[in-house]
Image 1: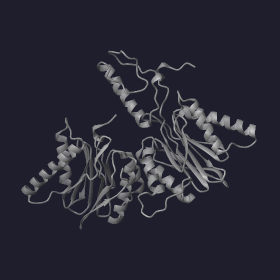
Image 2: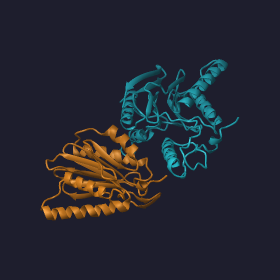
Image 3: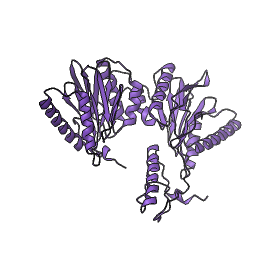
Length: 205
Length: 276
């Protein structure tokens, strides 16, 4: 029994640290069981303080990324300022709910720093129902695997480097038990100083 | 021996598929009540040809009572643990039912799955182990229990015990040994195993902490046993259960950790978990 959300395969985890957030995704692009690409981008940076990761149907992921950019640019032109992460996540939620009876098959995770520099995490289902957490948020095809790891390995108030390590271990070990995600991972760590991106090699299968 | 007709299409389903089947069956029941029957995707289907009215499910001989069991083999110890919740559907039937069963002075069996089959299986094995002890004048060894359990399970290949077993003990050299089983008796000696409803949650944690494949320069453990000390392993097992108890609805209430050593024999300790 295959669901449309598992057609392409993806895994995203985001975690909160001490005045920083980190978000990681795998890199596999597949069509059912066939792997078609190994460098797929699933986490997109909208501005200095906002990152969004998308899982689900790849086609909808890419369409929505373009729509987010469009709305972000329009906001910037009209308001002459950058969109805050709370405004962005509300925008994502509304955009998804507009298609309530023909939804986009994505589950986004929005991570960023608010205007006060505090970390912000918001996960949504495909209809846009938001969930705010202060520890971690994940989405993808292997949620149980990733939940087990995150619950065990996460601790609050980690420094950016430690947060990177914990997040990388959670994602890499989590996707090892899932056929539809993997082929390495990308970890983005967002601090008030800036964004650091690291590409990691995991089990390439 | 007569088998119920509905069993002709019984296939062993994993927990996830069984849940799918339960949901599918609910949908099928609602579909039958309102419209003509749609495609039914479960093993024991209601009678074909119902065109209207609520359809009655035929007798389904299994239930899934949940729970997680975990075992680790160490250099001179074996640890096996299981939670104590027994659930059925979304209800909790009991908060204090043990999944661990001592078969001989240094062998413990942990079983998750359908409680009816678990009880019967344990009763049968206890009888066989006692008979062995009386015939041979010594308690049955782990590898013999392992084979006996496999044969018992395969004896019911076409109406299986709905059980997921892990057998733990000390082998003849005193090294911990763990045997993990599927419901029809395939078994293998492994180093670490988790089974039951929290399997998908805990397995990657064990991969990460014992195999250490993503930790550069970390030592790889030997094939038969883990390289952690007994205290570290018990702590890891406790963490694994606490995490599974948070996110798995069928795991909770409390869990028992049983440590088997040559000096200490079998020692069981109980720790609390969330009761939600």
